[in-house]
Length: 185
Image (cartoon, rainbow, N blue to C red; front, side):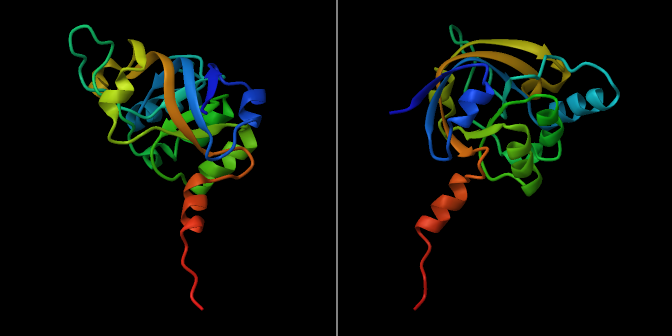
């Protein structure tokens, strides 16, 4: 049975999550990809405010398709997370608590997850149309010139994700590889 979590994430909730846990998120998440991440980190490094309060938030690495009439958003599948790896530790430093994407993360991100008590979730790749049904509202927040890569605020209900990296060093990708590793005799 999936764990149901009301966003924003707290340290208490994050401490209860382990790699492999299935979770349903309800609340607000933000969408940002690599170019938006770069702009946010540049603003932070110049002492400027980011386009939204990052503290306690979850960012989904996704570039949505245009919405069909009557829908909040088009297909909303995850994008490859490593493209955000050079920016993620800085965002965790200022309070980011959750990241959603697909694929493995760098060692620097894994170290920052433990240091700043953050969690990395995977969304189901290839299921963007199904995932979009869990998004109830989508609003442009910043960087409209980036098109599909602009920062957006999403209201989600029972948004399905799986914990990949937890604050204890758990790594679902490594656990999966180890489970099926063939040993030679």
